Every structure is written in structure tokens, then in C-alpha cells.
Image (cartoon, rainbow, N blue to C red):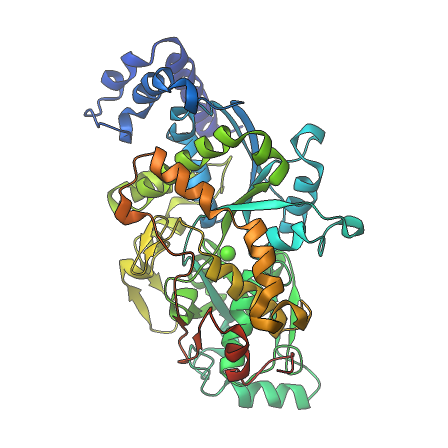
Amino acid sequence: MSDFFHQISRRKFIVTATASAGAVLLKGCLGNPPEPGGGNAQTQSTAQSVANISPELAPETKAVKLGYIPIVESAPLIIAKEKGFFAKYGMTDVELSKQASWGSARDNVEIGSAGGGIDGGQWQMPMPHLISEGVITKGNQKLPMYVLAQLITHGNGIAIASKWQGQGIDLKLAQAKGIVSQLKSKGSRFKAAHTFPHVNQDFWIRYWLGAGGIDPDQDIDLLPVPSAQTVANMKTGTMDAFSTGDPWPYRIVKDKIGYMAALTADIWKNHPEEYLAMRADWVDKNPKATKAILKGIMEAQQWCDNFDNRQEMTKILAQRQYFNVPEEVLFDPFMGKYDMGEGRIVDDKSMAALYWKDEKGSVSYPYKSHDLWFITESVRWGFLPKDYIVNNAAKARAIIDKVNREDIWKEAAKEAGIPAADIPTNTSRGVEEFFDGVKFDPEKPEEYLKTLKVKKVSV
Ligand code: CA
């Protein structure tokens, strides 16, 4: 261990030890002004709040194991732990477990914490639905899961290898179809990667290519490849595109490996991204602990959305036990500043990763209409059979009603004293619009599929 990390760990140990011995002293030691309800004085307020939890809200257990992937989507989990927001609501023993890949997260939730796995955590969509339905589990065993909150919007994008710089492979894909067709006819297809099939990052690049008239199944090679390998392949010229999340885009541009053709905020502003979901058996057994976890996450999301906190948030996330990246890789994107690498600079906080609120309202509340988009999009590309969306998506809606527990989110929000104005009253966010003008009306998913030019399903 380097001296630097040794010091950090040691300081952390002292702070932790002191906190349990007598947290009141800490505030003065660190020289921070008092901040009611959190902030730098959280260690003290945590100690007080835990003592103040009324018996009817006291969680059934203080322990839970939640998985996360070290990308910006996991920030609410890490911040809730580090700033004491889980502990404030009685969850004093939350273990965050870094997952090597989305496949391992899926395997670990199948095992459960009792077997050394996890009880839930961070997911791309619609993984909780696919796990619940046994579509991506071992032996197609159904493992019921509940979606409890959305963790984030934005924070993802599409990177293109440097060799394509200045040739029109950008958001509008003006020249891209010609380039891709030429490569195809030469027998060396355009190669693109994402990190796990049939979920968000696969959907974002598919939507974007489809809008440009490119069929991701017929015209290019689109494959799941681990992030580090994709970046290495982009460097050597054997990978052309990567659908990925922060902190990768910044590193790709900074190291001149590629440029950013689009942010997901360009493709679909205020789009649904990753979610908190847990095993249904854990939630059913521990309903108060589930709400305590949710309250901790909600408080973390509000803290994350205060841009004055983003420097501190960057420091926390960059640490070795979490993302293990230099702070500079995270900070500018967190402030809505993206050097896209092709002469385009984005400087707009409404395009940054947002955790609690966006221009459309709540980020944290899990809208059922968004689950329906992910399932509709799965049908579009042939990942799920068409029967999910016929009869106005009766089958999809039935699954969503089982998996999406926005009712628990609302109960937790009320208990946490979230103002009524911040608690959505409709499970649908209404009609959504994409960058190419296509609209998704959650009342008519089949109509949406009909308007799309590039698709695998016949409607
Ligand atoms: Ca993502």
C-alpha cells in the first residue's frame, strides 16, 4: 500500500473509530460549520438520528449487501453509505459490493447474501424484469425482484474511434450510413461494443444507429465487450464505437483514443438510466429496512444534486475502494462540462448526471412508463417475443405491475418528509420524445414500434 493510501485508510480508520466512540467531538476537529440535516456534520447527526427512529419505523435488520458497478450510476449508493444517510435511518450495516461485471451482479443476486452473493443493488434495465421472468438466469429459474428507485439520468454516451474524426459520424449520423455500407461491402464491418446485451447501453447505441438508418444487426457488428478491452481495441484500431458511461468517455477523449458522437442526454434528454432493485423475498421479509434503504438513497440523491457538493462527491467516488480513478476524470462531467473531442464543448448542468430531479420532474421515482419503454424496445430488437406488447402490452404491463414497486418508493418518500410536490401522482411520465422527433406514447407502445424504420419485429 502506498504511503498516500496508507494515510487515507488510517485517517478513515481514526474517523470511524472516533465516530463510534464519541461523534460529537468530530465537528470541531474537522473545522466544518454546522449543517442541519446532513452535510459535513453527518457523523454527528447520524448518531442522533439513529437514536431517534421511532419503533414503528425501526428496520427489521440493520444489514444488507448491495452490489454496484464503479460508474457514476452507483453514486447514490456510495454517498448514502459514506455520508451516513443509510445509518441515519437505522441501516448501520450496509455492505456495498463492487461487481466485476453485469453478469456477476446477476449471478450474485441469484445466490443472495446468505450464500455470499448480494440482496440487490444497481441494475441496467430491464435486468430486474428479465431476472424475475427467468429470461437471463441459470436454468431460466424465475427470481422475483422489485424495482424500487431510479438512481440516475444521463451520464452515458457513444464514443467513436479517432480514425473516424471529421467524417460525419456524429449525433445526426449524416455520413455514417455511407461509411458503414462501404465497410460492409468490403467485408470488414463497422465494430461497436457495449458492456452487457439487451440492456441500456445496448439500447442507446441501437436507438442512435437506427435513427440514422443503420441496422445494428445487419449493417455492423455489435457485441458485448468489457470496457477496458474495448478501449484497448479502440486504441489499436480494431474497435470503432463504444456505448458507455462516465468515467469512460472522458478518458477516451482525454487520451485521444476517440471522440464523443453523442451523449445519451442528446439522444433522449432526461431519459431513464439505471435503477435500484432488490430480491423480492428480501423486501417482503424486511419492508421497513427496505424503506430505510430508500430513504437513505433519496437523501443521497438530493445531496448529489447540489452542485456545491460535487467536488466532495468526486473525491469520495474517485477513492481506490470505489472507482479508483483520478478525480479530474469525474469532476468536469459532473459539472455538465464535456469536451466531446470533435470541437464540440458541452457546458450545461442540465446535461450532467442528475440524481434527484431533472427538467421533467423526479429522477428518483421509478415511472412504470419507463419500464414499458425498455420492454417495448426489447421487443423492437427481438430480445423478447412480440406477445409482450400485443393487446396494448397487456403482458408487459402485468410483469411491470409485479416488478415495479413505485408504491414502496412513495411510502418511503412520505415517511422521509419529501414535499408532496416532489412525489409524482401518475405512474406514467407521459409521451417521451427522442432526438430524431420520434415519440413514445406509453398508452400506445405498438404505435411507437410502427413509427420506427429500423427494427427486427414486424408490426
Ligand atoms: Ca449506464
